[in-house]
Amino acid sequence: PAEHPHHPSGPLVLAVVLGAVAGFVDAHVYLNVTPVFVANMSGNLIHLGMFAGSGRWEPAVGSGVAVAAFLAGVVVATVHHDRQVVRGAVVRPHALVSVEALLVLALPALLAVLDIRFEAQTTPRQYPVLVVAGLAMGLQTAALRRVGEIAVATTYGTGAIVRIGEKLALGARGADRAGAHRRRRTIAILVAVLASYVAGAAAAAWAGSAHLFLLVPGTALALTAIILHRRSPGR
Image 1 (tube, one colour):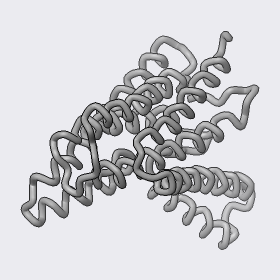
Image 2 (spheres, helix red, strand yellow):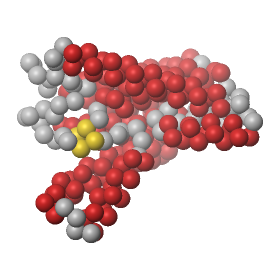
Image 3 (cartoon, rainbow, N blue to C red):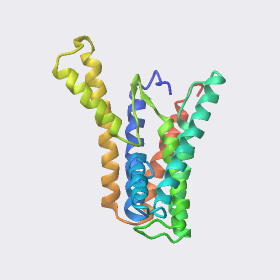
Image 4 (tube, rainbow, N blue to C red):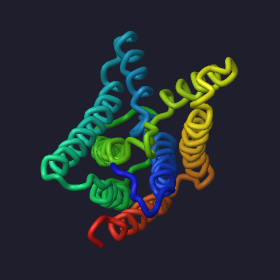
């Protein structure tokens, strides 16, 4: 998505908000629903490998459901962005953030209706929760991919850690002195997004098991979507 010329800090603020939301939702589901990740797909792939290696296929289904839902969210978001590009419109994330907000806000009601309590082994009753949360996180992943010219990911952190390490190593060696400012800015942005992700997870762990706490990230997403819509071109 293009950076709004009148709000140069907007994409960074959005990335921090989305990172915190992903950390919160991922941690809440993992700690209070079932130990499956809905944002960090690397963890689910490891689960799938371990379960396959041990011949335990039943607990692998929950991780597979989350991966499939996340992938579906990425596909839907990418199709939306591509349609905007084909139409010649400015690609803005507010529509995807709005849908994500609705999905996250729906989670407490879904958890209440299904009477979901924590279970160490995922059961079919929890699959709808994994689908809704995974879909929301997949949409988010494709909603914002860059802060200015710097690529970011708001639902996982491995790539960011690798890039921070690379930038630190290049800086220590004095490589590309002309790009030192951009390198420092890249590190600062990636650290900010990673910190927000960790902070969101910490907040979920601190908040406890009440599913109504999911209204907090859902409301944050809704307010963010409204602000983004008001800042859209033509308004």
